[in-house]
Amino acid sequence: MMTSTEIRQAFLDFFKSKGHEIVPSAPIVVKNDPTLMFTNAGMNQFKDYFLGNKQSPFPRVADTQKCLRVSGKHNDLEEVGVDTYHHTMFEMLGNWSFGDYFKTEAIAWSWELLTEVFKIPKDRLYVSVFEGDEKEGLPYDAEAATEWKKWISEDRIIRGKKKDNFWEMGDTGPCGPCSEIHVDCRPDEERQLVDGKTLVNADHPQVIEIWNNVFIQFNRLKDGSLQPLPARHVDTGMGFERLVRVLQNKTSNYDTDVFSGTIAAIETITGKKYDFSDSREAIAFRVLSDHIRAISFTIADGQLPASTGAGYVIRRILRRAVRYYYSYLDYKQPLLNQLVAVIANQFEHVFPELKQQEAFVTKVIKEEEDSFLRTLEKGLKRMDELMNPVRGKSGTIAGKDAFELYDTYGFPIDLTRLIASENNITIDEAGFEAEMQQQKNRSRAATAVDTEDWQLVHGEVPVTFVGYEDLNVPTRVTKYRKV
Ligand code: ATP
Ligand code: MG
Ligand code: MG
Ligand code: MG
Image 1 (cartoon, rainbow, N blue to C red):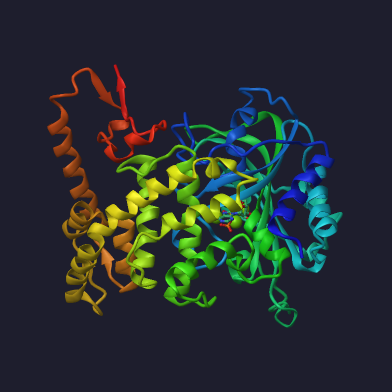
Image 2 (tube, rainbow, N blue to C red):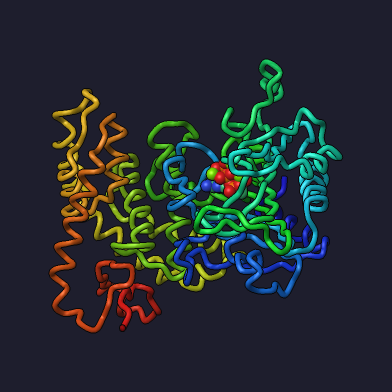
């Protein structure tokens, strides 16, 4: 059985042999792009090549890219740990053609890699092609279907809708039809087709999408219209952890050697045993081993936890993780920071930036945990008081109460929502937003006096991080810009 390290290398070697330049991952934190906070796909760093703003030094490139999908257009946070294949942070293996090869080669090579190098049985693979969308004036991707027919029988080619088979990075930018590859990991006896229908991704937890081949032909403009691009490109993304799961014959990404070291460390620290089940305890194991990667790599790439913007996204993930170990693993001390070393060592040869900043990242996480653990117990008690009167009655928590949890106990709204939903209770989200807005107005009024010649970027509240200043590293907390 191949290890995850060998699998990653085999991918890169394969595309190197097809004339691709192997390049490093871009940082997971996106700087200088107002449309995106975090890298959510391998193609982000190549956006300018697709738009024709810049010329790539190489017509063919391949890499493994650190991605994060917890905000904006791609937000998988709620699935994480509950299902077995959506992560917050994951590696996206990718190969690109910048105006060079197109559908013929891309499709042939993905087939060759999966079936000949990785030896995935052909009768476990399905592919999808874009069926077209008349309303949007988008054609059926007949070209891709023709290419696939060279390799796979027609009943394994599925037509997909715009939602899954037309790829867009954000509200604007390069886009085009795509062809997804799905692997059926169900045991043989369960693989009989039901009513002659093939099962794809969402239909069964063991039939998962592993690779997306995007054929970039258009640019979506702000007004929603599509413009053909000057040159056609290939942009592919394969979920590394999913590929490893398939090749290591596991039923969950968390059972592969990508996560086993972290899970073992959590077992040692908490004295609990991971039991692969759907229990809250097992979910906590999965959530922690997922979230620590997202937190560690974003901090290593320069995004500190903060109370606004991208930094708040990280703080939210971190607090969510703290609550999981506190409530479900019955561990009341800072835990996450103890896992940084495990991840740093595991990825030292792929993403050395974490190992290089191991002590710093550990310290930042520890301080964040200490700070949240100071209010968590009281916040959970308050949450109980708020839930008790409405428990079992599908009740609602008022906006002002959710705001109190946020303001006094540091509960991000998604954490309050998560705890409430575990008790079949909802939150008055609009009421919460209104309270938030009022607070913003209050603090704007309060800071107006001493910001005469400074202006807030994006109207954000100033953030200060007194705790990190002794660490002598560049931070990205400055939200002021001189005018
Ligand atoms: P899914 O339908 O499973 O949510 P997707 O269609 O949103 O995946 P793409 O945008 O096509 O994903 O990204 C390319 C590949 O990246 C996917 O085929 C999948 O293997 C992987 N991937 C996407 N999201 C995640 C995630 N949250 N965690 C792990 N891998 C992912
Ligand atoms: Mg998705
Ligand atoms: Mg999909
Ligand atoms: Mg996809």
